[in-house]
Image 1 (tube, rainbow, N blue to C red):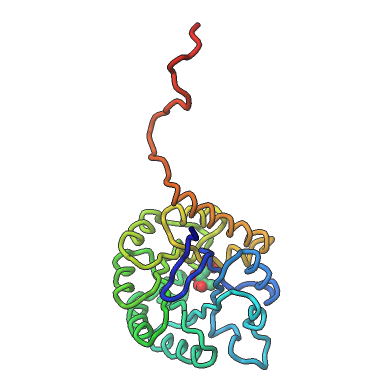
Image 2 (tube, rainbow, N blue to C red):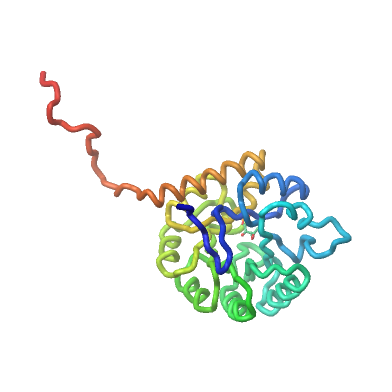
Length: 259
Ligand SMILES: CC(=O)[C@@H](O)[C@H](O)COP(=O)(O)O
């Protein structure tokens, strides 16, 4: 049976979402995205052109693929800015699935402003958007976002672009326990094993950008991420063995050759 990731009315067979920033050009962005098998690529629509047909447009690269563009509100620091931005983007492109990202600290951590995020989520969800909300790794905020209409919550593993990997594994599990919508671990993934761990913890998906775009070989890392997310998901579904402090022998002691 197919293992489908359902986000609002949208369905995906890949549980990996990629970003589009930090690549040298759109061609490399496209090649890495295809290599990753991702069916969603998020785009900072305040910075990257997807609306003006007269300039080089990222949408042109993906128009013959089944990759869904996921506009994000990077660069927005208030609910009002994000709401205005997404309404403009939907008007221009028809895209209604969005990654809501409202930054509270633009200097050091790029941590989200969760109060503004909840406010914007409520308005945008009522307005018919499928809202995927970037947030901190806090189960209370995740629940509030779900109540505000989020179709998915996206707790950070670590600061955006840090590559630190999952800083608090328990919080990923707590967020997963707190909500009934998909949990996509977003930001701070540094390598393929980080993605696999997120999936083994029970995340429904992973979003990663910097780890692929800034790898020495982005295409190879994209493929590694694809396999890591698949392996992590399989491992989670298969069920890990309980951890025990002492050894248990791998073969029975009965019938052993006696000396
Ligand atoms: C591209 C995007 O949406 C980022 O804001 C996201 O959080 C990815 O973070 P990394 O670059 O650390 O993967």
